[in-house]
Structure formats: C-alpha cells, structure tokens
Image (cartoon, rainbow, N blue to C red):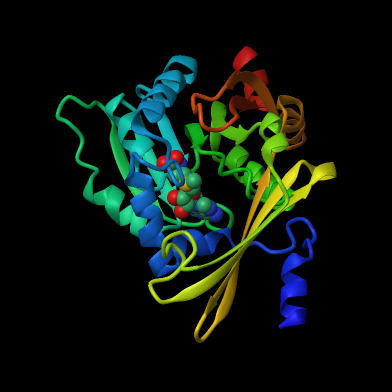
Length: 284
Ligand SMILES: C[S@@+](CC[C@H](N)C(=O)[O-])C[C@H]1O[C@@H](n2cnc3c(N)ncnc32)[C@H](O)[C@@H]1O
C-alpha cells in the first residue's frame, strides 16, 4: 500500500503515458462523455451552444464555409459539423468515438434550406488515413493540447497532407495565461465525480501536477475497482501565440490569423494557418 501511494504522488515524466483515448472509447466513459457533450450545464466535453454558434460564425467570416470541403477532426456528436453544413459546407466529421458518431449520424438530418452535406466516419486521426483535398480542416475544443510533441508533429504533417493548396487549418488551444491557475493537488473519494468513472463501485485518486518549465499540466486519475486498478492521464499543454506559431512553422504552416477564444470559462485562443507552399501557389 505504501509503495502504491508513493507512486501516485510521484510526478510522471511529461507525456510518459497516452490514455486520452480511454475517455472516449471505453463503453461506460463514452456514454458519460456524450452526456457531457450534449449538456448545457457542463462544458466538460463540448462548449455551450451559444459559444459554438459564435465560433462557427467566426470561422465562416474568417475563412469562408459555403461551398468548401471541410473536415472536422474530433467532431464528437457533430455539434459544429451540422452547423458548418447548414452554412453550405461539404463536411466530413471524423472521430474515434463510435458512440458519438452514432449520435451524430442519427441527428445528421439537415434543414431543407441547407446547401451543404455532412457525412461521418469513425477513425483515429493520429493513426488512420484521412481525406485529402480539403479546403478547411478544423480541430476544435483544444484537442491539440493533450497530445505529446511527437503526436502533435505527426498530426500537423497529416493535416498538411489533407489540405488543398491554400487550404485553411483552424484550431484552438489553451492559452498560457490559464497555466497560472493550475495548482499541484491531491484528491480522493468513493465514486469520485458522481460515478463518472465506472458504473460499479470504485475509489478514485486524482492528482494534478504542474510542469513549470514545460507549461504543461497533468491530471492523473487512478481508479480502484474491486477487480482492477486503472489510470487515465490527462495532459494539457498550454501555448502562447508564439509557441504555437513556432510548432506550426516547423510543420510547414504559416499563421494567418490569431484571435481570442469565445469561451469565457477558459482562457483559449484560435489560430488560422495555411500550408506555406499553398500561400506561394496562391500568390503565383
Ligand atoms: C473535447 S472533445 C471535442 C469534440 C468537438 N470538437 C466539440 O467541441 O464538440 C474531443 C473529441 O475528439 C475526439 N478525439 C480525441 N482524440 C482523437 C483521435 N486521436 N482521433 C479521433 N478522434 C479523437 C474525442 O472522441 C472527442 O469527441
């Protein structure tokens, strides 16, 4: 028991474990996350509908949506994808949560007035082939931030391949300003987070670790059930416009636009980037 508790208190190496997928693909957790996506009471999985509307409107105004081929990576239950299609985009929504995609497909009926279309696919955007020749690729709700530097580089390379010349990549990230609020912390409870982690009885340890030099935070959840003990590591990389632009540049993108996020609950910013050679092609 002493060794177990000591291990829980030891800060792991940055990005030493990737387990974000469990949150979205475990049968019980996927149901919980879908409920959070759709709830207007919690911003845990998706933002509230008024923030989503404002974000879609901003993307429409900034990069254009109507008549565009648009791929929404990590589309969840399609809250953005349907709105993009209603505004005339030909949308492909991609997510590795079969549960969320099933919900999105069941609710994909667009109003008759919509000019666009929407289709969905269950796929992992880090490991599966992705569609090419897209005018716009979106990655919304800070989904870039739980990824390790190697995963981020891999994803950016894949997104560059997806984009048509002069295509636009739109993503949002948590801003460095929010890192000041992260506190090292330890919590413990029976059925912690109101039964979120399992339908069965369980105890959970929740440790938050700061990594000051890396502007990185980890929420480490250790779930102890009668027959098994398992963990979820939630990493969150904080960015400044400069650190994000440097990563995008290293992957062959150029930043065209940076703007504050619309979510008042979280300090975020939005970036629009384009492949460097796309810019050249466009200006030739
Ligand atoms: C925070 S939610 C945001 C969902 C949606 N963009 C929204 O804001 O409503 C993250 C989504 O990304 C999906 N996701 C995370 N990693 C993924 C991966 N490697 N491949 C595909 N989908 C992924 C999750 O299943 C989840 O639906």
